[in-house]
Image (cartoon, rainbow, N blue to C red):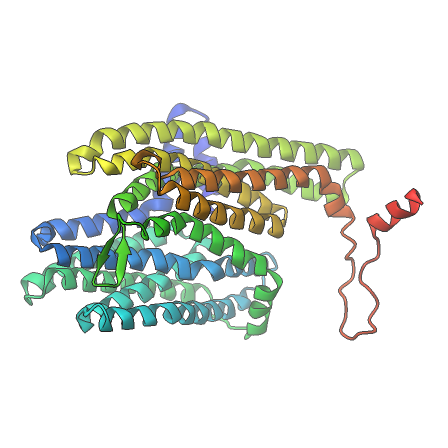
Length: 488
């Protein structure tokens, strides 16, 4: 999100209701446009190709394949991209642009290998046990790997602040998807579900290819510093766990309900619960604007306060440092409360719209009974995400990791209990998990506020420790030892 703030500053500078609406619309569209384009392409293919007229097995096999492609594509890409993003931010700050291509190639290999490790065994199971046609299995695997490459390349273009190109490439890819699937069915007589799946494969491949080509056009020199990238995974291993458990927490409540008697099983391979999954999708869309609102406002407001505090620490007086610190945390509290107010209004409006409109499209009954509780859970969860971003700002990687793990574990345990409740309370597990993660992150931020001076001035590590057992300690000051001497 690092570049939207510049554009939004120009929009919000006039400080009117109209510009506020324009700014919010711009930030929302530019960030969730890829998601909207993909959903629109899938729905358009279903309408044009008569998807609703197919038999139940064919429809569910296609829907389950697409669901698994997206869910597990996100999960397998999540552990590594946070560390790669940190490496990119650091080398761009240091203006060592020749190290970007090594980061890209290392990340590409890691993502492909890690995703294939989980994707290939599932495809073998699907082929042998599920008796799914080999060409359909292969098409599903190709779509899964292509989407992983799309997610990975989006990381680099996001760092380059090229959100417009990302949206454009998704549009071109999905436009090709619709055209190709239409040609496969009506020109070559191919089956509808296979044509739609192959169309998605080709569309995702085009999007990934365009993204890769743009990255290579930006960065042409390779420093060969592959060890530096690998070292970051060892140095910032907390980021791997934080991003993985946060992403896993997004879906783990779905996985719990996939084990209940309400699940459906397709081809002895795909397990899902369509009513709960659809309610989850609606709840996520209800609150997706929270991350957009928060990060765009943070770039415009909090980042400036954080920068002034850093400048005060480098060369300011004690009074200047204290004032800058107080203003920074005052802005932090203001941004969180402002996010709560704005997102609450957006959530209420989206909730009413979904409640009124969804029955017109055939989504009612159980889905709308599950939806309200899940919407509340995602509301709290996106607030927790805002706190995680602040923890990253203050380099509290252990706090961010503890918050993400607490969120994931609490959501798992809460969902195991809530699946025995009545339908309207199915989402309580997510509400409980989000609240636990939010609480842990909140108290970590409070601890940082109280102990920030110690964290900044008394870290004690002024020198890098050299190799060898006899090397002197790199700790030059220990606050605890001083306190112990005073007590004695």
